[in-house]
Length: 463
Image 1 (spheres, helix red, strand yellow):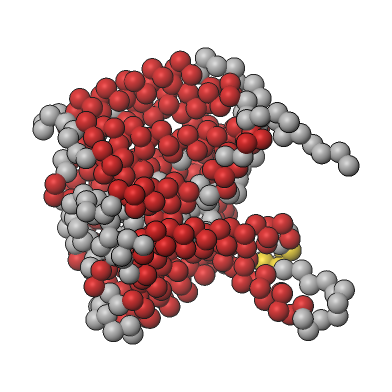
Image 2 (tube, helix red, strand yellow):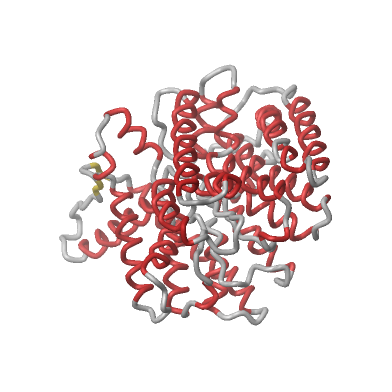
């Protein structure tokens, strides 16, 4: 038996393409300085942007050949790690506690929205920086960078497929342009609706950025009542697969959306969740029930009520809804609606097999197409991994004296990159538990496996 050797990571290619990412991050990360001119908070953002651009240009000189899928995963992972460290350092330089500053950086770039800060205690520049990082993190820095690659080909495609599950056009560059166009359009519509709902322009800008990215950072502790209808609609729109939107636009046929399995599943989850919340004894209004349900299912993280006052039954339900998350191919988190559908169909097939002859073939179909057995296995494995991570993370919280319902809720919110909180995430949360949530957020943003694959020692040593 011949075993194929695993080739170690080609660090030259990783350095080159990551340098390209940093060359883009640099100018973008300087934008918050525009809001910091008036209150003296601009210098850290200017210095951070300049250093990032310089480092990026230097790394781009590395050898670019040998870009494979592993190298693409490495670039993708670094794409989320570096901005988290950059923003955390900038906030720290403004006088905030170190652990809380880096927590905000991780929460921003992973589009989670959990925060240890009160919206009233941070400057407009930090508000904008967090929201901007969520907006860019929603589509992925590495995806944007494909626009700047001079040669289309496997490297561009591989970088794209790490972030976007389904290519919408023959070339990666065109795919990114199309996806970005849809993303900008959703952001613009969100901002307009928030303005029409009576929000001030700055608040509307922040909420537009964090709605399109399903990020959830807000300028208010609770979403203003007037913004609730706009948020419900735009969170649901932002949580759907961008490839489905592309097909609907290309064919000029809204029926494409109505036939989308993920959209149907998403709507069912929201309606069922809202109805159960209304019947839970919480005393929540219908509008707030649908807001919380949409926020959890889309993994945006807005709330118009105090989640900490909800009954345990509501917390357990919302924990499960957050873990399922949004549609595959959207900016949302969780293990995704499509994988829930695949797992349910796979379990149904397993049950039916007991009633069939031993050698009978019973394929799993979705939309008339047979789902590959490897895909079924991956979906089930990913769901299991999510459950294990949440269990271990929640165990760490319970060992510090927190209730099981609150512990599951907080860790599910972090792993699903949602941002809803049962009140545990605060400046008083022990530093070790803040680190647990930060790890969960990073793992959830890239769905765990890219990080796990990169940690394998055979990526670094030849056999």
